[in-house]
Image 1 (cartoon, one colour):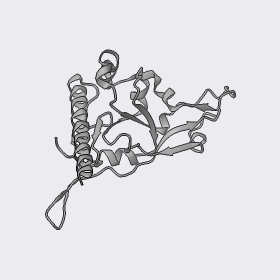
Image 2: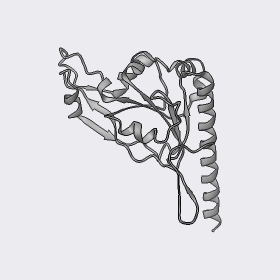
Image 3: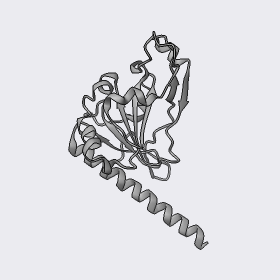
Image 4: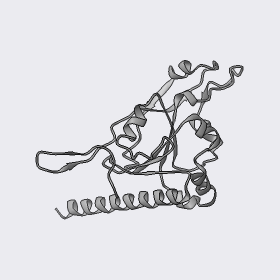
Length: 206
C-alpha cells in the first residue's frame, strides 16, 4: 500500500512519511433558534478524532450538496443498505463544512439541542461507527489532502493508519472503490492488532 503526502529523508537516510496533524472538529453543537451560522459557532464543542479507540480510520469529506442528497456517495450508501455486515466495526468519520449545518427552524424555540448526526440523516447511513463531524474553512481538507493525487476531489474517502499516515484515497461513488477501501482498512487493522500482540508477548517474556 502506498504512502501519500510529501516525504522527507532524515539525516540517517530514513524516509519520513507525511502524518496528518491534529485538527479540531465540531463533534456536537447547540442550536440557537436563530438561523445564523455565527450563533452556532458560539456553541461549538471542539473535538479531535479519537485515534486511541480508532488507530486506523476513514475520513470522508463532504460539502453541503453531497450531504443533503447523497450525490457521489451512491456506492457507499448501497453498501450500507445491502452489505452492512462488511462495514461492521469500520469507523467512518464524515466531515462537512460548518456552513452546511442545518439549524432548527427559527420559529422553533422549544429545543435548543440537537445531535449533529441528525444533520446527516438524509444520507440514510446508520452505522455503529458512523461519526459525523463539522469543520470550518479548509484546515481539515488541507491536512488530509496534502499531496493528494491529481484525480482526488473533495468527496473522496481517506484511509489513515495508526501512525497517522495517509494510505489511500477512494471514490465513494464506485462499488469497486468502496470494496477496496473496506479490504484495505481491514488489512491495516489486522496488521496493527498483530503488531500489538507481538509487542505484548515480548513484554510478557521479558
